[in-house]
Image (cartoon, rainbow, N blue to C red; front, side, top):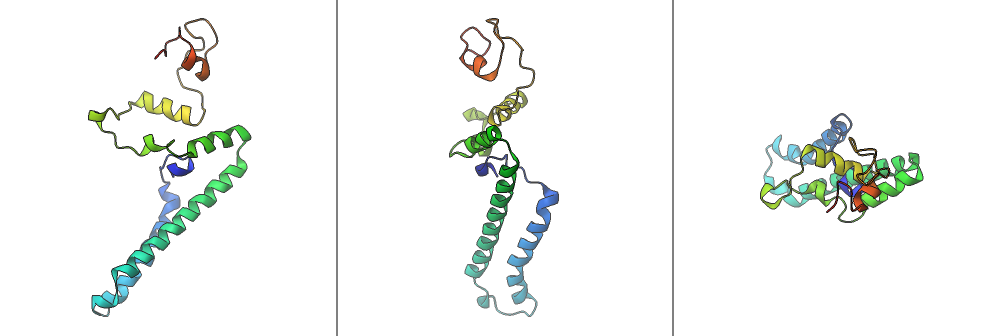
Length: 151
């Protein structure tokens, strides 16, 4: 999930078994009422909400476990990048609706560059040298007053 420094893009082949089990758990309460044709009063909305919340908690715990396993395999600089991506507000641009009238739209190049900056990857198609003649990297291109990225 984005709150743990990810992109929020689930992997369906891995998530399907957990989502299926969650669906079975939540709907089992309803099944117990529908099949014998009992009154719905025996099955309150509160019971169903509790089951849903329990499944959400399990999903959150699973995400945290995967995050911790991944963190153990990363080098120090990548861990730092992931910790920064996890900070409050750092992922809000990934979950914001792309509203054109508010200017919340990124084209393909901007999105790709933003992801590269988020994870400290090399930006694709970035010139090797700046307009000032020095070797170009992200830090230099964002601070050089003579380069192409002057704000």
